Structures are given as structure tokens and as C-alpha cells.
Length: 235
Length: 110
Image 1: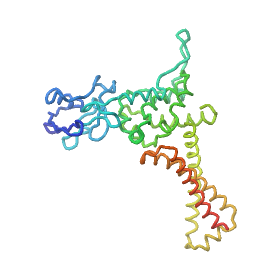
Image 2: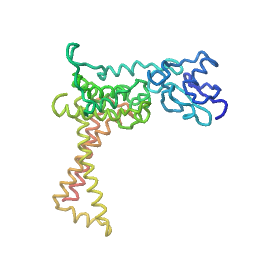
Image 3: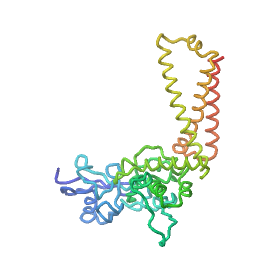
Image 4: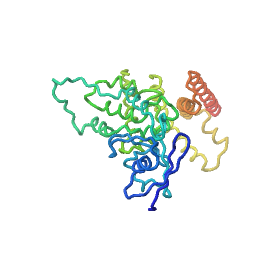
């Protein structure tokens, strides 16, 4: 490990170079924070929890989208240098900060909120943890909404209306939730050219998801569920 | 939206048919070329054979269904062609595949 790390940061259309002291277990977010605090206070970036929970700090690191707070420099540096840019497929606000509104609007468009029929007067719904539906929901439930999958997805870059892996993964967890009552509406929302049928199964989302989820599997589940509903005339 | 679902199911179903047809087709090729290949040998097998006529008719039909559905997103994603004329183009492409394919099938049958 050399004493310093060469860092290039994409700011607008130009790359700006910095030299940052190396430390053991240093994360990419540490590097960006050092630059902002010690070298250039005008650098804009976003973070919150620093422990891989909030999904705020995703950036493009050496060409691939990553959560920077849990990405060690040792793992991604090439020849003691890294290049950092904002997430792809999202409008740029400034430097490393993207506008996440379209990303989260698409969760809403995909029917991403839970809709139950029970009231607080009802008893708890019995949901067996080993039931197929619950296992399917559990497999996708830990999404932190970081946008890494959305930035990794080529279909989003080709079809800006495409709901994207995270929104569809969310829809799949709800379709698999025995307590939810809006399955029909949700399947309608996710079917079609801007929904699950646009996915080409490239699996970039699954490859890049920092939580090791598989939105691709969820999207395949949605395709099957939509087809079943269509055959039953229930779409 | 329902059209997209129907097209997806048609593409999946035709893919299943194609997978089977391609295997039979390749196996036939491997078998047929063992002692060299001649037009007379091919025509000797296909002429007047209703089985091969039915098989290749199904093959052509599956290809004519499958390929144009796959062409639609290619046209949308690479050329930005999302207007209804895209569907017309895909339908014409399907008709062309069907016509050319069946022309060949009937030529080796009759």
C-alpha cells in the first residue's frame, strides 16, 4: 500500500484530481469526506448513516455503482488510484449528488406501499416463515433503496420509463406478502413495456446489489404472476 | 399493457417450441450429412412427406411469432421507435418470415 491514493472525481463534465493519504480499512466514503473537509469544501456528496443502512452514499467507483461507506479502497483501487462519479441513470444535482426523485416515484408507480385489510382490532395475521410466499418476500425485503441496481441497469438507460429493479423488487415482495390485498392493482402497474416485461435478465442489478438481493429473481416472479393472472382473466 | 403480457406469453411459448424444433433440426442435419450431402438426398426425404411438412410448418410459425416480438424492444431501445408504426413493422416482419419460410417448406415438399 502506497502512502497516498490518487483520486479523480467527476465534477460536472470534468475530472478533478486529488491526492489523499491512505489508511488501513479506508472506505471510499472516507476518501470523499477527506477531500471535502481538507482539500475542497465545495465538493458536494451525500451520506448519512456510514454503516450500510440508509442507502444515501451510492456513487460510481471505477465505473461500477457501489455503496461507498462499505466499499474498502483496498478492494477497488487500481494502481493506487480510483475514479469516483455520481450514479448513472439519475439526473445530476451537483458533483456526486443525484436527484433520486424519479427513482422513488417509480416505487410508488409500481405500487410499492403495503395495503392490508386488517384493522387494529383484528388479531395478528398468521404468516408461516417457511411458506413459499414468505420466503420469496424475505429474499427481497432487505433493500435499502440505495439506487445501485437502478444505476447498473442498462434497460433503464435505454428506456427512461422503465420502473427499474428496485421498484419491481419492492412490488414482488408485496405480491408475495399474504397480508397485502392490492395484488391485482400492483400486477397491473408492473406489467408491460415500462414494467417487468422490459427486463432482459442481464442481471447487472443482481451483480451489483450491495445487499446481495436478486431483483432479477423478483422480476421473473412478477412475470410469472402477471401471466397467471392474465390466464385467469384477472388482470 | 395486456398486449405486452400476451406478447410475452407468446414469445415464451414460441421459445419452447423453437427449442424443441432446433434440437430436432440439428440432429437431422448431423444424421443427414454423415455420407455427404446432396440436394437429391434432402428432397428424397422431404418430398411428399407430410411429417416433415408439419414439422417445418410449426418451426416456421414459431420463428415468425418469436423473432418479431423480440425485434420490438430492440427497435424501441436502440432506435427510440415507440410509436404504433413499430408494431406494424414487426407485423410485416412476421408476415415476411412466415411467407419466406413457408415458401421454402413447400418448395422441398412439393
